Image (tube, rainbow over all chains, first blue to last red; front, side):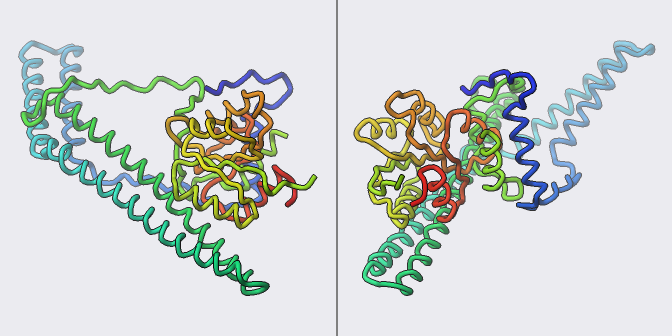
Length: 242
Length: 128
């Protein structure tokens, strides 16, 4: 695992040098970056409303416990409302047929994405088969025609790298679907909607604060085009070490 | 010193398509002795079989990633001076810093073009 050595005094750290290098390139306008998109408040999602209601009821319960005016009847009344909300939430989740989502929808979506990777790989290989034939013909040519074909075939190879990038992006989507699948599984168990198999309850723990960058932290895949670091920025970053 | 265009070049990527693209682009640059590996473990095996003049590796591979391969190469007495270029879609600053700290010779972000590949190889190997 990469660990950072403490930087000597009066010497900028690699990270600071890196940040300076990147900001310097950005300032030079090598690559204009799009402003971050404003977050739209959007419509409240179903389920969130229920959670808010439940939180409100819990708040009331706590207030009645802590408040000056309270009695057992108030507390029981609020707890009954809370229980009713939980029952409603369970019914709503059951109506969503999470087992179907887990066993049918998610695997099907995952299979479709795998098929896309396969199809684009096949298409890319077919394009390269044809391009290699063009290269063989090119070997028998000279001067301008040979140069023109060389330029064209190079451009085709460059364009074919799309398959690698899209493949990595789709793989990440498939991994996300698998995460959703395990969350749905946990939901089925936690709410025991009656249609899920009883598996052990998965507790959702918060990730501990990162103290050092691990190899796993460095596997992020392709970045969004408007956020990706450009080759010029990477060159500047590398040069900052010299 | 002139670059030996007959040197053995090892390309490492878990996408066969990318290996083929790289091989063809290297062929257009007149590097004809190109070997392939699909992950870091296989790459170390191939590197032990003959002498190589250059490694071009992807980062995101299983079970051994490109950065792990780079660290193994740099820790090996016979291989530690071998030019090692990373070609990857991992473009975050921390990736570049980690690669540099591990001893990468140069870093190319995907998608890349033939001109970028050539210029980075020139900076590592010298003009050819």
